Image (cartoon, rainbow, N blue to C red; front, top):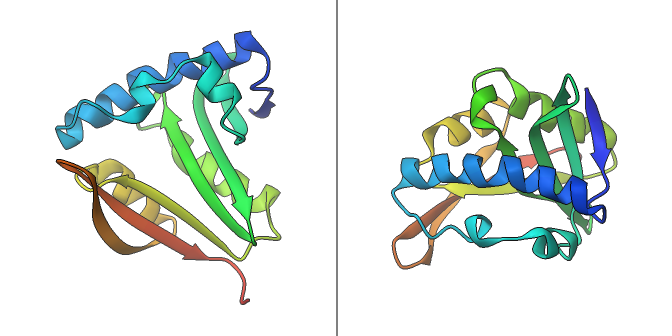
Length: 153
């Protein structure tokens, strides 16, 4: 079941962190870069992010999270994470599809992931995203950028 997450609630923010930290630790290993910014975040960072958060729950356990901002009809995914115990269950795909339905007024979706994060890259490509470029955002940290057109502008 997917529910809106009230990130202003400390317990909810902590539950997001409880998914975020182990999820990004796996990504850090995949891309061989261990200083990912999400690994250093705390409750206050999440609460001040200005992002919209939705969570995928299994028996009241938060198993996956998606967060985003919308600007000028572009939905920018800031986080898409799944608890490692729930990898390979389709949760990331379900969250992406949910956001597309909920935010059906947008023209495009953009997202970035580690250039060597093959599982995430495959997910985005499978969901109709196109890779639009790569860039080095920090010494040794390369990101792949993706875009999906939703409506003609």
